[in-house]
Length: 271
Picture 1 (cartoon, one colour):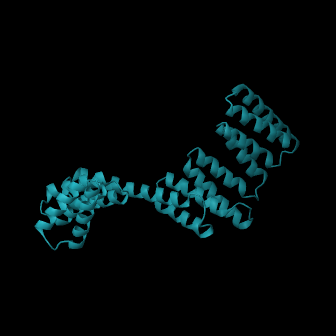
Picture 2 (picture 1 turned 90 degrees about the vertical axis):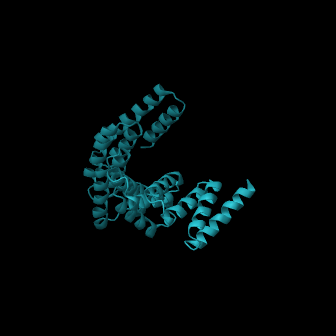
Picture 3 (picture 1 turned 180 degrees about the horizontal axis):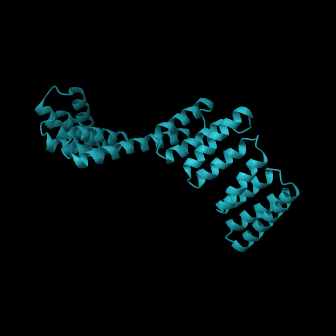
């Protein structure tokens, strides 16, 4: 196995140097040696697992899948090959098959515990679920990761990404409703609120302006428009809108109007 690793390392170094012929030569040697090992010891799962890794690295996915399935048949009591199979399907974006493999991992690992960290399996399964737009289920898996390892790499980033994807799904839902009912100002409010959550203030401004066109006297839309202008860095427009809101109703959202007028004036003084 040491020689196989040596051949593979040389192949990767040659690939990095863009010496394709040399890389292919060393990969062929590694694969040939593994094939010999597998003939000598056909029930050893280490060999097909290693060969699957090499095949995946050169994107020979059909061969990699066959070797992973072979490794699973060779060692039916070891859950780790199922985890690796899930990773393979995740890499090839076959998310349903990835989830199925991860689920089977947990079933087998419960009976025959492996050394595979569960946090990593939950994390990878969450990525697969996100790929299928199963956002709530993906977030549940990330909660399980956090219970096991709060410092897990990219945990917070992944959670934010999935939450944003979930919000985008709602935006698309509201956009569909608005397409059929363009004067549905309540749905425009809902969509604008999500745009603000993902800091897309330009889109929020468009929705608040659309509401004002439908309901010119809507004070909530007017104030939120002024705040959105401020958050978008358009301080003079923010100040103008909020002054208009104050003229219309001195007491409506008085603290918010006063605060953002002050902030806008301060920003303009500095510019």
